[in-house]
Image (cartoon, rainbow, N blue to C red; front, side):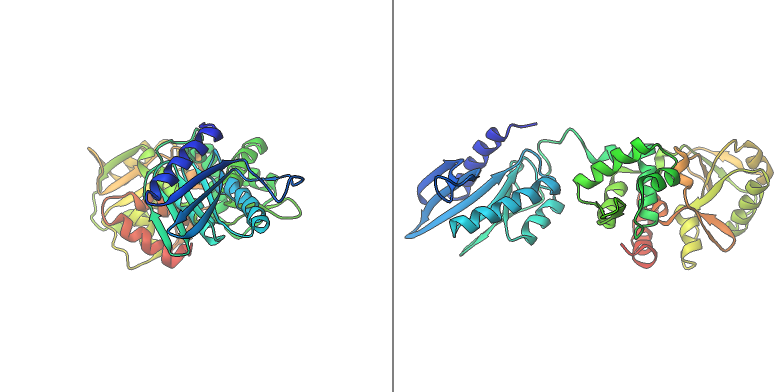
Length: 352
């Protein structure tokens, strides 16, 4: 992690580069604000002149640009500005994500990061640079939230997005330990994606952000896939036979991708059948008369990479479908119109 002192030094240089034509540039490190007896200290104050007008930037730097850390900086900036009576409040960090940037702007502040993103809007000044990737990836990337067992917690939260959970309820639903739930929720709290109520129950605050992050970290190809051709071409008949035989064999199963989407939204055409099946699929393959092919086939049996994939299936037309969040992330990465169908599913059936 970059030291705050080093961040502050680089931030000051970045600000100087943004205002090459100004005069009387002055940088004050840790100035006391509000008189000698005040314990209110700013991180960095920059003073300069644009023409005849004096300008002041009040900057708080943080080693981490996640919402939780920036919210604290924003609160401190409010106190500083109240004491100083003037000045444009600005937060800075090694990287400020689009979500963090939105939080900062909503609170009337500007931002600058060491990856090249910034937003400053005061008086007749508007400087905005967006879309630069993180040049200094954090040691705790979001993908740690989406390890198999952690994703069980994520799935449960997304399936019941309006529910306030007690930790033991969430652990029981996800099939993981209390300690594991605590670790996942701690990370989600850092991102301000969940919040606790007075009774200690946890509820999602940013369901859409969490779903986006899971989608970007996931692919249905994590699940081993076996492709086949079927003796009949009617996909609906194949799906009905597959569900019937799997049930008879005691194999947990649920349809996904276009097969699953066709059951949620009947207007979806079933070009291929994808179905998660837990356990030994050989008896099922024989019962259906399926013939193996290389790669994906007309019928595809996926072995869940984790039991949580089959969490909270829904039944449509008498057939099981994976949970809607699982169906969305599966669809999104499928080549054949996957993103188009995923977007429609999200709009029509998920709602966040």
